[in-house]
Amino acid sequence: MTVAPFIILGAIAAQRVAELAWARRNTRRLKAQGAVEAGASHYPFIVLLHASWLGSMLLFLPQPAAISVVPLVLFLLLQLGRFWVLLSLGPLFTTRIVTLPGTALVRTGPYRFVRHPNYLVVSGEILLLPLALREPTVALVFTLLNAAVLFWRIRVEDAALATRR
Image (cartoon, rainbow, N blue to C red; front, side, top):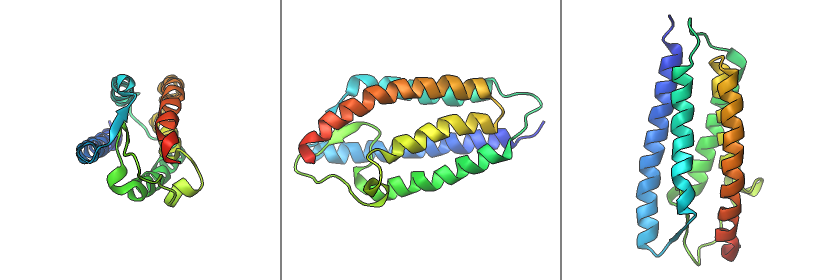
């Protein structure tokens, strides 16, 4: 049995935990400055979706475990997009919808080209990582679930950001 899939899943889980910690710190700082949270009721669904996605990949990992190289390379390329988003947002990065009245919208980095670049990155990740681990059912199910959650979240986020345009 190869350990590479377990190393990959562990690295992604560690990445997500680090991002959640940074986002939590940023959220506290923004709220201390007067920021307002919108759509808090759907946040647990997002956390559940991502935790279930990672857990499902581990649970349904085919044995013997093998990796498909093309989806893995594409997934790794998406990490560059993820870091570009995080660098562009800086202290404004949160995993919640938190808006600070009077603050201009970020229009640098990938935000020059796409309104919600992180959602594109995450959608690609949710599709590609299970495909890299040869789990097409996990890829399909969670891509559809993510699309449903994002449909809801983007509407809430756009409404919250409308005053800052």
